[in-house]
Length: 64
Image (cartoon, rainbow, N blue to C red; front, side, top):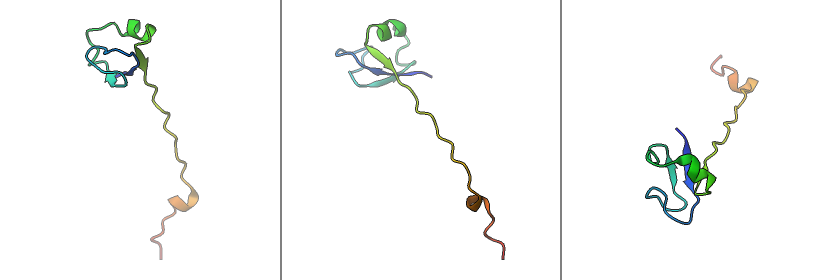
């Protein structure tokens, strides 16, 4: 599901400037036209960084 930020100075589909909305909130509007007009900006998700396991983290410390 795509998410957007309202970047217009006016309300968009009942949402205030700065609000985060998704496809459900914008079901009855032309999203492409609102983006082209500068009223909405797509949110970009941040890439998830993968943490590599170190040998110390994978050792079994319960051995005695």
